[in-house]
Image (cartoon, rainbow, N blue to C red):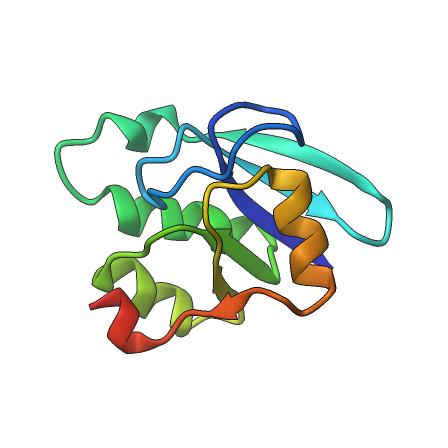
Length: 116
């Protein structure tokens, strides 16, 4: 399983960034291989509009099964909901802690009402 997490920087000790579309980067953690890749989101970070939709496309194209962030906008939510990516909410803990909490089943799955 690949878990994508919005992050402030490119390591597992980074804080989870609460802004999905405008997070500086995504950490893609592969639970089977126990390693991760970093995807720079700078192009969307400074976008005038459409950052959430473009970030959602990036996550979908990465092959992520799960996405952890603080907030999701309605357009990004709709796009992600239409894919196979499950979305979960995390407060600003470390990426490593968020992944651990997800694997333990302790994170809240986002609802449509929360995204709107």
